[in-house]
Length: 184
Image 1: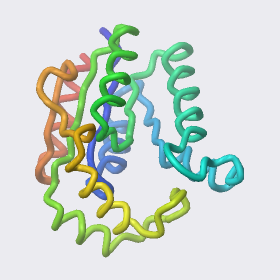
Image 2 (image 1 turned 135 degrees about the vertical axis):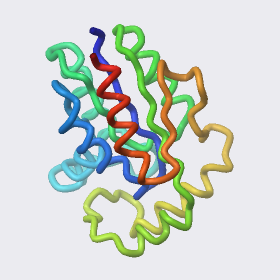
Image 3 (image 1 turned 180 degrees about the horizontal axis):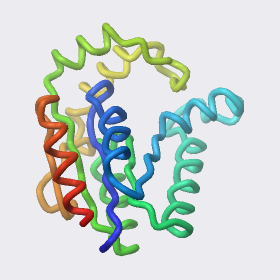
Image 4 (image 1 turned 90 degrees about the vertical axis):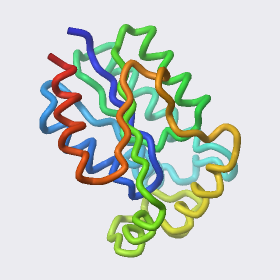
């Protein structure tokens, strides 16, 4: 059986990390790679190396190193828990994995902004992952505004081998089961 790469796509507080952790528990021989962990590591130990503007290239370098290691040195299915809303970046990521003979799965969290706003207001999540934002509401507002830009887009059928769209939290269990079935 081919290895799977499961890539989550969605705005902040849409459920990507929770989904990834639940999937990891049910998908044998899998590991979650979450850029929020890398951001927290950089912010804690190497804050002075962070770029002041533009992409957080040090965080991406750490993520790429971990992904490359997992691809080359393990036989794990990989669960990438990131926002992955940029079409060009998502396309490059998918090409990388297709070239390594992975089956790709996109899981798009397409919950209404009103639900995300409620979740952000009630959130107890650590803000230690932030580089420039001061709150998750600021992140959500920026992501909502970014959605109007050309390079930010929802995943489309055909981008990956499989696409699942979650519009309601009640769909999570069935999507996880479908992905587990793909691994068999």
